[in-house]
Amino acid sequence: MKVVDYIAEYLQSSGTKHVFGFQGGSITPLIDAIGKTGSIEYVQNYHEQASAFCADAYARISGKLGIAIGSNGPGFTNLISGIANAYLDSIPCLFITGQVNTTDINISENIRQNGFQEVGTIDIVKPITKYAVTIKHSSRIKFELDKAIHIATSRRKGAVLIDLPLDIQFEEIDKSTLISYVPQEKDLPIDTMPIQTTIAMIESSERPLVLIGGGVRNSGAVEELNRFIALTAIPTVSTLMGLDVFTPNNYGFCGIYGNTYANLSAYNSDLLLVLGSRLSKRQFGKSREKYAPHARIIHVDIDENEFGHSVDAEATINADIRLFLRELNKAISLRSTKSGRFSKWLKKLDDWKIKYAKSALLNSKNFDPVQVVAEISRTIPNGSIICSDVGQNQMWLAQGFELKYNQRILNSGGLGCMGFSLPAAIGAKVASPQSTVAAFMGDGGFQMNLQELQLIAQRQPGIKCIVFNNHTLGMIKEMQKKFFNENYLGTEIGYQAPNLRLLADAYGLRYLKIQTMRQLDFFSDIWKDNDSYIIEIEINQENTYVLNRHNEERIYGEIESL
Image (cartoon, rainbow, N blue to C red; front, side):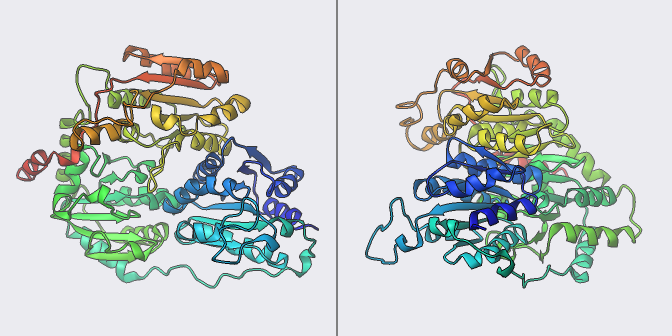
């Protein structure tokens, strides 16, 4: 059988149901073979970057490997943003790229290019993949597929890439002679010492707090976390990537763009249990003293390289979070704990949440985007998937959206890639066709991948595209206002948003414009129908986002009352 037929059969036997991509000469043989399986649906996007984001979101929602393919040269380079996104957010994705014939691959450092549309794929993606390889011998195909998929889906998950020269794709192989890859590494053991250390620190604490990072969802630890919360009654706050995890006593989005009451919780805590967060500067700001100065920190992460490079912790635990919490829960359940031990602390957090509930609002007169998000979140049904883009709209959603138990929020976290939400919504919908899917975005991010509206027009998946239109690139405009003498080059000067009504007409989508709070009532009916929408929410251009984390007088004042 040909190599491409073997790859298609391999993916089929592995349970693959969908592959995203864009046709190209050097990948056509593989796409043809995939199509012939009859059980794998090939989803043709209109840009390879969108294919990569679709695969990323598909993996997050399905819990399976996301797969995107593209041709060599520009087909590959268009995938790069999506490859980096999956790598930085620890999402298991396999990217397969076509390549020129092995005889045409450039082997000289002095020559820029040998084959047509040839670039050095592996050298380019090494920093943004867990593993990348060009198949130069057809006998290695099973070994490399085994190895790449194992690496993508184990430990700290992420992106891998297999580069397929065109002549290799056509080569005949005997699959009975193919060698397999046998993983050498073992699962990280869970020692009893870190478990006992964690319990001792909790028992000596009066104001403990759990910081939920993206690693909780990535490790499949949501149920174990909620079991831990039920056993201990410890409150939680979330990073941007941790917003996707529901806990019953969560006190909001924490960090430099976070809710005031969430940051107050961190500032006043005496113990911070960090689960799967890399504790970046967007979380802590410039110093720990402005974030959690009174707290001892326990940092749990699958990647030991994340310890200490940003914030020093009193205890570091290198472990899979799901396995760690499972063993921690077992140990805690065997001990007698005092019921209501943290009741005073929880009461204080409740008071702050009520007191500062409106601190995220930008104004009290004009149409407020954070309040709009809050109102929309109250109408969107259980089981919905919310895809966020990047920019002010992302922060408005993070601060205002009230997550329900079985809802999901997908973010482009580490890379922060504009144009993520629209293709992510498509990938999420393909993974979960019965779910209500909404893509929140600004007018800037919307234009990054708006060609995928054609795919929505074709498939009619019922995706609701919610566009906050302030006719500017708001996050950059805010920076220009503060630091560049209001020289709005590229945000107002030279920038325009399209007519979204005409755009909806062009793609045959339904259109709705929201200009008042009363009109938000329309959403109750919109979620019930199966049509795809562009919903334009007109926002005053002067609505700029305030970094609540920098409102330090409010935070420092509250510590005195404890």
